[in-house]
Image 1 (cartoon, one colour):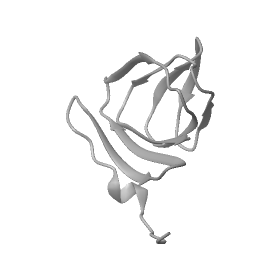
Image 2 (image 1 turned 30 degrees about the vertical axis):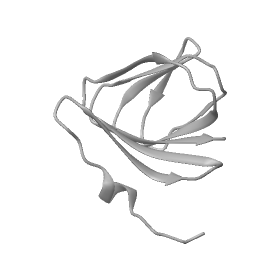
Image 3 (image 1 turned 120 degrees about the vertical axis):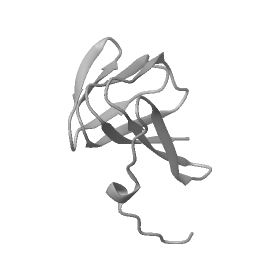
Length: 102
């Protein structure tokens, strides 16, 4: 496995009124994706067949997980079990890492 260094804040870019994603790591056991959500955007409720976590880099939003609202603020770490409904709303430009474990 090759070792790489990336400054995540250097990778953060926002699209006016949109959501951008960039794969950071993709392997048989782990997928890590950087999401950049413009303020006012949402990701509707859905589930994942994989467990994982969200780590907020910057911004402010609401992460709804299993019917419970969690504030998305810098450095927040949110664990998700597989098959639990969740949704996101960015109140301002918000970036986060989504890591899913196979």
